Length: 289
Length: 242
Image 1 (tube, rainbow over the protein chains, first blue to last red):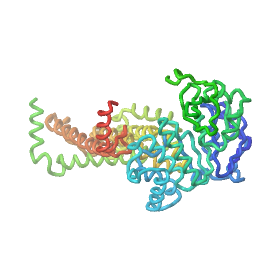
Image 2: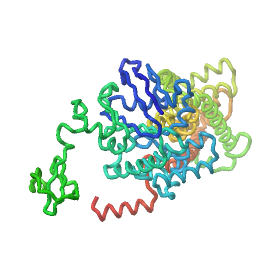
Image 3: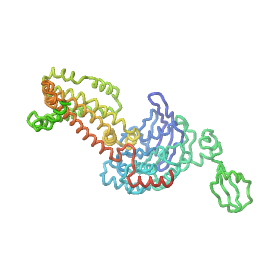
Image 4: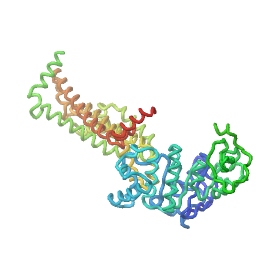
């Protein structure tokens, strides 16, 4: 369990990144910090492994205040995955993954063996292990980053926009893979993103942040979508512009054709009771766009 | 032109190279001085430069100090030190170390600074301590520039080490100054040519070292895929028109 207790961060030059923030992330669940750039979400994430020291308040892991834990030791038991992978370019993929086990004193052979296990878990071909990071695609590099984060079998995984720099197709695939891995490994994950779809896909709990780490809304994905009270949240989630409203149209076969706000057909719902066709909200010419 | 021909002729005689005062002995002395000066500079300036690059502190002071050291006229410095230490190797060595140190220092901190901050940040976030970040990440990735500093310093020292003979030490300055004093221009010129050859040789060794570094996949500037894959990608690009 990770607990933020009224943490705040003010830098020496007077800028306030986070004013006062509290959150509890239960063990084995994924919390997504969602917000645009400059909302302090990365700052909050980095407080958990003491890459950033809070100016006020405290962060607790399993009831233990981490300000008393030696940062280097703390970081070695917390997985960290970042945007652009942050891999060491002069080391082979397998040795990148084995970084933390090696730091923890594992022999080179044991660490590499562990590395190959992880490559399999994150869906990487073992023969890529002897390549250098620069010889992999962006998506592959991110998988290596995830594997490295998992290498010491940490309870906690911190993910800072890990899929932000890959193309949308690969991103969706990586999200699916992460969900699968999480299903298996049940880590406590804090995931930072500005991508609402990513948040809805991965979060057990989503916290929408405004500037200064102020919580605009928080809850499960379903609660968040149902909540239209807060204007900021609606706008951020795209509820106000109708970008997330769907419309249904009865087809001749009695099935429901679902389309999004732009009239783009998304799929069909097989209708059981074959009732009378409802008013169509989607015109054929819209669909053609 | 006559002097050049005579110098070359002299260089091709066995007499010029053999004996206790021959060019071979002098060249080895010269090389020895260079390595010693470079070694002392590296011992002092490398750790300092790495520290400055790693901590980001003291950079302003380092720039000022190296600028000032570079402005010092080496001959003046040599004479000044020699006034205190007398003739021998101490004074030229002090002068050469001060000549070489700024390049070594600048190369070291520039090398560390050239490492991508995101890579360093990631290494820290994985749980590397300061020493591990320096030795496992910053030094290996900064090596090309660190080596450039040493290369530059080596060339400066080789060219300047002739001054050692000015205060009674050996090296290729001996035949050079002898030629100057006795109006024996072919000898002077011949010694200069040997200095130049030595400089080219040392530079080539460093160049080779840097070339080897560049061939290491992780240190190459733009990252390249293995050859087979490159060809495949190229073919795909051609067929799909990307």
